Image (cartoon, rainbow, N blue to C red):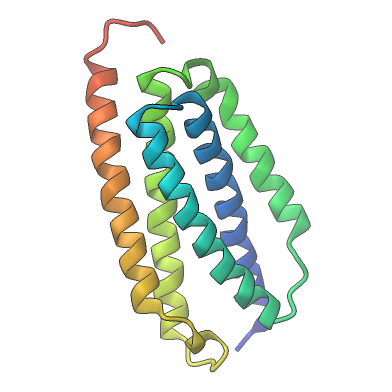
Amino acid sequence: MNLELLTTYLNDHRAGATAATDMLERLINENQGEPLGDFATTLLNEIEQDEAELEGLIKRYDAMPGVVKQAVAWAGAKMTTPKIGRTMAGDFGNFQTLEILSIGILGKRALWRMLQSLSDPELLSLDYGRLIERADSQFQQVEQWRLRIGTMAMNSTAAV
């Protein structure tokens, strides 16, 4: 197995998790005391658990943290602020954030499926069935929120 490609792949997904964490923290801050904020808090805890699983794999392969990739992910999340940030407290900004998160969760599911298909003993130590099931559940929940908030946003008379 090409360890350089594997560690690049793992670090790419770590960067995605960093961006997701930042977006969820913004959702939590903008929706404190509301059901969406509570949901985002629960989802953040699950995403952090998934990220810990990923970190464990990266450490097994002695991969140096992708500092540049993590910085790019962080900057990418911040760059969404001008577009999403100006309406972040509103339904449309929440809708956009949920849509980005849903795409990221599908990517994470694809990561777990890919790793499950490889035959390396270090990779086979994770319970991919559980991780895939959790990603499916996360996607379904985010999708429900995305559709609910998106419908409210699209039916709103508020300007963006």
